[in-house]
Image 1 (cartoon, rainbow, N blue to C red):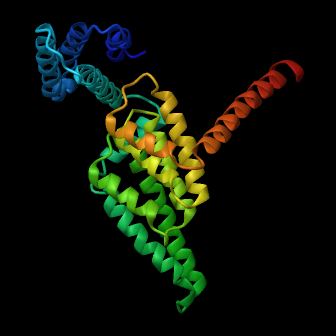
Image 2 (cartoon, one colour):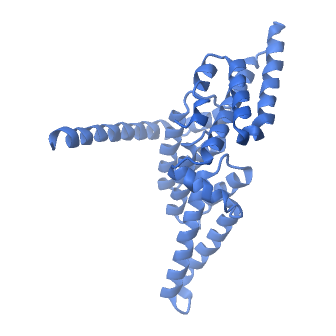
Image 3 (cartoon, rainbow, N blue to C red):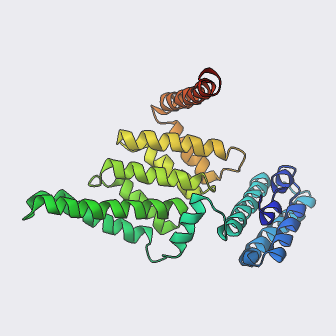
Length: 287
């Protein structure tokens, strides 16, 4: 583990034990040790002050039904800050595909998701009308290549963004609802949302997956459900905001929710068993 990452290795234990003061101390040391983290000093101070106000109110012994929720929000805020700090530290030289891609994306900041999505919609429309061109075969090749390049750009941009901004979320939501765009492209977007979610918890990504599950396009809905279940499992120990809880409660009221979750879970179980059997076969039977 990189030495700059080791300074965060006790955070999970400290937060699970409710030792927020100690956790704030670790983050203070991280900011002093690593100059690239100074941008997070303001957010750290905001969380510290919020915890101080909450603790002072609790010590007065006054009834507060929202105290537990406030505490959980502060803990989640600390978790999000740790995620952002670790990401910043690893950004410098982490050799993984994700961070290599992220470094490239940060070097081309002009390609925003809404702008790329607008270009893709235009190219997709031209591709659908290519048969009417003077040279249909050439037009199809040209527009197909443009569409493929934009799909790659969008995938990488969505995958590596953290967190998703409001404009990015809106552009993705519009694309997933656009009947003129191909289903495979929408499935690609869902996969990009999931892969980014696997790197860091992002509420907007979870909300997008929940909404995509409600899609009337089966391929998109199934992929979104599998991605959502994986995301919920990965971050099962993290605090879920009231916004997410309410949206999830609404999904549970859908007629097919229980059936779909049961089916997806069984497929996950079967895939894990397949991996076990394949590994046993390769390691024991073949030799």
